[in-house]
Length: 293
Image 1 (cartoon, helix red, strand yellow):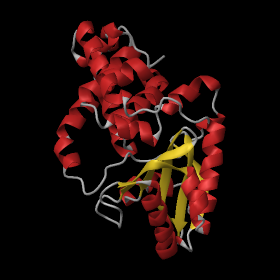
Image 2 (image 1 turned 90 degrees about the horizontal axis):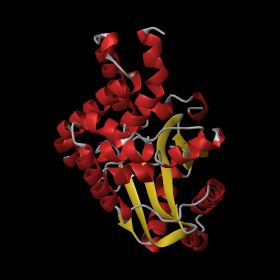
Image 3 (image 1 turned 135 degrees about the vertical axis):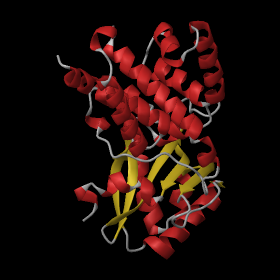
Image 4 (image 1 turned 30 degrees about the vertical axis):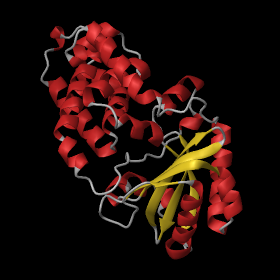
């Protein structure tokens, strides 16, 4: 196997790590390309494991990128949300479904609470199942330190992650019910779908209209959603789609993707609504021919 074939064998893994680390498709693709360039300059006989070596390059690139981008994200206008992707994980083998959970917008948003190093150790261990000795080499910390970092990361995440996530079937059913209730202005049904302490987050990136701060409470969120539909979305085309491995909704207006909505469901109700409106984060979805009609 030549070096190109060997790299391509691990390209999907490298992108999966980079996207979960960075939360944007374009940045993840850039990291994959930079990893490939460094791989080309490496003497193959010095590499014991291509998978470990490539993952090490990718991990360090992502950590450095997140540290340098910290100020930029702190100055971001409004709420920063990950860039959504259209996926087809629901039709993937069963052993990929657990990995799909780590792809959700809700999960990626929670990861923003971790430092770059905590995020790397958490993902490498809990999602991609590397052992501590491998992670130690990748992040330049001892195995003992990596265990401590992982413990700290989990403490940060425990209160944020749902204990009883909804099944794929329940997610799809509730998403369809939300679509119907929100477009018909059926506030009683909408309130039944929303948790009492539901949170609505919208990311416009300072480029388009969006709520600058999260909204909280089912009545406030329900009325806000209906007002948006009445004022801007009455003539939009709404389509159910699989977004980051879970059912979501795409709004299309005049042949352009207007927004992408994903949900977090807890105990059979919508706990969080994530509405990505930033045009830069919708570019990949806009390329889908089926959505730009």
